[in-house]
Image 1 (cartoon, rainbow, N blue to C red):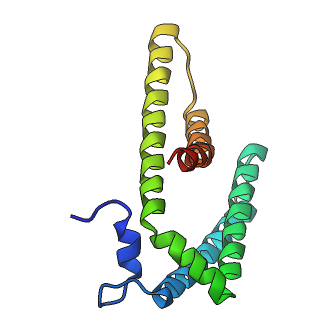
Image 2: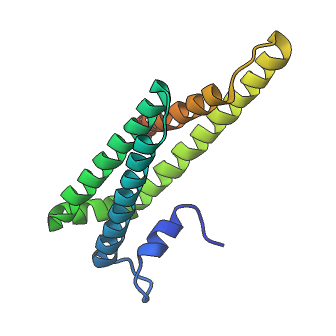
Length: 156
């Protein structure tokens, strides 16, 4: 059974089983192409669907985030030095451990948030819409990951 985080490295490795920078370059190009397709899909959806202001802003934010990721990948791919630094960061054992620890903490925070919301609903009669719940979880996951990762990097 494959451990968490090993799938990414295994997916990037050559048939010999050793990770290579060239496979990382190919994988980064594939991910960039996939992100370009997602930007196009979201742009078409934003244009074709009549969304309210909040949802159209959300989709526009997704598009901007995806374009930022595409820009970063293109920036990394243009220089061998930056590509090698990104490769080392991706396959480094310490980074994989910190990411796994951060994800475990975020999952614990999500489970705690769900329990608190269930208690509020049953004991206090507070009703929360699914849309608000999903957006709250998205914010908790994204910003929580950034904050928790920053703290975990300082502690370990």
